[in-house]
Length: 356
Image (tube, rainbow, N blue to C red; front, side, top):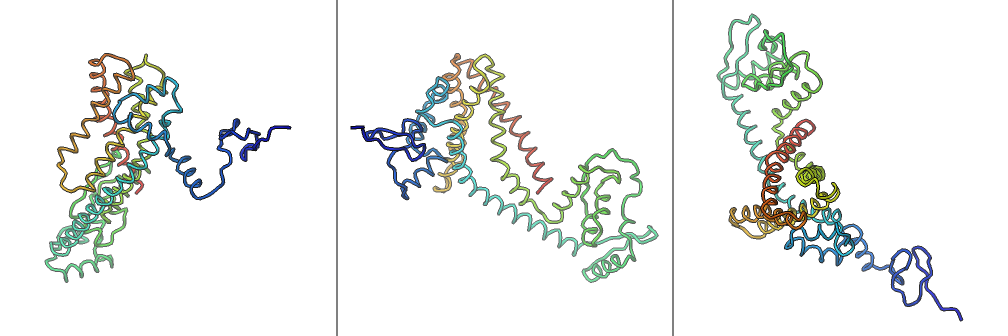
């Protein structure tokens, strides 16, 4: 009598009745689809929320460099893959970070609104001046009624806005140099064309596309006080930027430890180190959300302790003397914190300004 066997529903391979998993594809045998199985597969496939995560999080937090060392040695099934862990931890971090973002945007919007209202009041309250067609006299307006009458005259071309623009700017080096003053308020209030305002701001007539775009966004920001939109665009670009900045960190490690493995080894170390950073910052933000009046110095102390984690992780992973690792970790941290990150954030802010 032939031995009874069970068929894998995934790859249709025959397995013994005693087998729990398929010998060919590894899928669990005999599972019937239900809500429990569906939920577990979803979490497991996309976030690897299984035993490997819990086996990984403790050594990640308390044994610097250990998991990266084990992964390099070939123990890659016992602990969560660095890429999967990085994705899971960053999702949690930006979820928590989003609460702080919303508060920051609210503050910026309120400040921008207040500033916009103050400018509007100044235009209506203070003296509004325009040069007459002959370019000789100055018409001064002392109250709102006269200001409204003057604006009507300007719109009917009795006075030309262009007469107030500089007439001696014939050459230009295409340098971007915004010139916001009280005349810009008058031009905007009078409904002057963007081209006239650009010239008053200092843009050359032969400005290229990039320069023109910069002045256009500057005027847009000036008119709408859209600092909150720029801020939001900047924040939205941070997750993408981190996927670029983390490999840059690995590249710096490669420069300082060029004899200690290939670039992929340094990348593995960087993945796990950034997982630690995002976990720590998630805890700091989470605790500050749940508990009021946490001393700022305590949060900064916890954040600064990540440098010592980096140092200890380098000692274990790169197998170098603790003093040499301390010096290298200090230099690497300085380069990254005071050169790479500020430059990256300036670029991100610049892009946010150009495309918000």
